[in-house]
Image 1: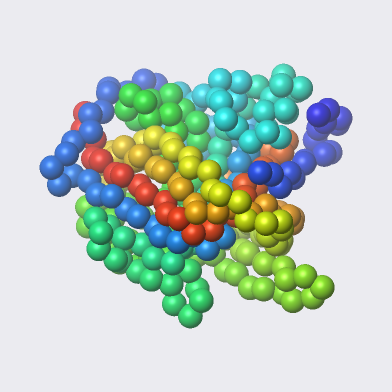
Image 2: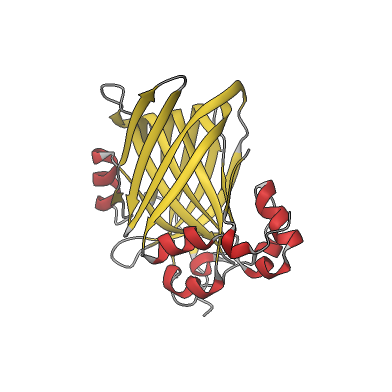
Length: 275
């Protein structure tokens, strides 16, 4: 897939300093968060320009280049293969989840109200051993949502949880279009689109991430996304803003939007780590 000239053709594809090692602690220093019954959320995969990385990752991080990361969306893999200059760019992901409920250790935190799902949003970049945690090959740069009790739970344990919202409305015409607006750190993301095709069984995906919480705490996050079903998405994505995050999304030679997640559950096993 040749991009010539690449700066003029930002492609949107709807597709399917070293630190001392940190050791996970048990015994009340972590929880399992569960987000039940996905309501059509999705993830946006992109490549971050290495020149922007110092502004997006904490000092001492060791980012992984796209050429060394497996299981990227097909369009990003093709770009890395066909355009060698992008092999050094850093795989990144922004996920916008919508769920019927959130739980911590089996206790329900919040439920959807008036057909408004609970929002869970997170961002990550590919690194080696995030915050010195062996095997944590993604660094969680932001975690948040609009679940008040979950936010209270996270803040009480110094986990840290940012207040995030996702505006959504439906526009009816020949087809029903979904308009979504998400804001974070000086960036505005607008998605207009719809689900197409028949649902198919969901694909389970797992990641290990390192996260810097509040008050100098560090956490290992074992993430497993297991939707019951998935549907393809078709639509358009627009990014506004001049923040580093906005610039990274705009500069990516392609942005790959995942399938919409339906049903099933997402789990985050969170363990506090120490030096």
